[in-house]
Length: 173
Image (cartoon, rainbow, N blue to C red):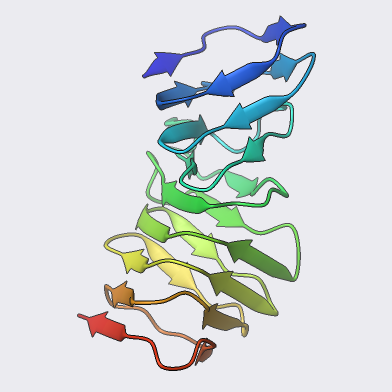
């Protein structure tokens, strides 16, 4: 894990090839392109300003909050996510999507914090794992559109759809 302790601006191309870049809530500016590759993780509090990355297949964006023990409301970045993880260091921090729809082309994982799904459709291409924290459905629909997907954890959905025919769906509680 590489952790940032001050704001960083570079004129270079930025790539997270493997491992984790923890921005530590600091500004991170790439002068050229910023890519998170397969196996790379971009770890955010949720409030920092960073260059919008290209998130390749297999990449992960993980939101952790600031760890101050207070309640902080974060809005997820408007990215084209592959894997999306909410793992708040503060159990009461809230995370909401900026749009009425959200798409994670890979897995969605909620281990801690309060996640409010979009009010329309939250599409997930991989597994849905809810091992901790609170999932708030926001009167929207969770739609799984991948193959051989697993749902784990105790979760209440408002509407739930599986949009790929003739595939395997496992629910584990």
